[in-house]
Length: 338
Ligand code: PHB
Ligand code: FE
Image 1 (cartoon, rainbow, N blue to C red):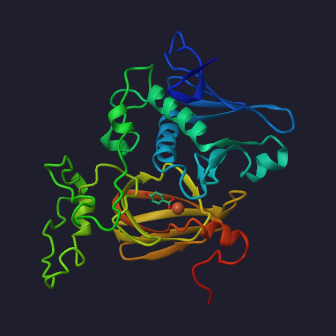
Image 2: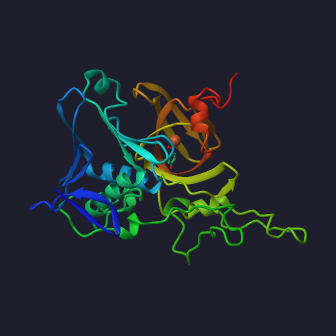
């Protein structure tokens, strides 16, 4: 392993030479080891009881999860890659853990958690995803819309990995804000949404209010999403973030909440597995059909399964204080009490 550092690269990433046969580099972050081969990502660590541990994930599943964690800046709370490994965002630093939020691993004492400055884990994850993603595999795409993640190292797909998340500052389509999607902007209508009307609302603003009164066709906007399980911001009012997304196959992470979030199923359906965020113990199965709304309490983790491409509106409370208000008991873990 060598640390590649230069004046321009203040955060050293620790990695090996490419493997002589499969071509992938191995990475080290703190005492965690990451390796990939033709089919799997392997993570190694020493459990806090001293036992040498290893854990393997399908390479495609690992890269899809890694992509979300990076693209979302470690997200709100926990990003579980599966029921063993994941990250917990402290907004400035990030925990990387293995088994810490798995009731059985924890009880056996084979868990490990280490904390890193956000930039250090980000830089390591970025080099890892660049090295481990082959040409033709897009970790944001639905499995039916991308090539294979498997095999020996074969080029890269940096164009897909470096996609910028689409975040409106006020509202999609407002002057100077995130533009509407179109064929010309490289956003054709998805195969599943050919029947979605593309007309836009007429806006008749009073003189002087042209920059304040606004509307757009959200269904048309979503019908042109090129990615799955990657919420964009379509409107932002203070800390109220409307984050719609199109979903197909499964959410590549299991999200553990540090705040309440709401789901509105805009079409088709998603089946959610919900569990205890600390142990993973199953709590509920939520089948959401078109028009259904649900809220995920701050004490749960959840993963969605979308049998067909569907449209989901995620409503987030983006307040930087809410997580601490919940920890101190000043804000509730549930959206409503009956
Ligand atoms: C979630 O964790 O709540 C989540 C994340 C990404 C999505 C949908 C839901 O696309
Ligand atoms: Fe969530």
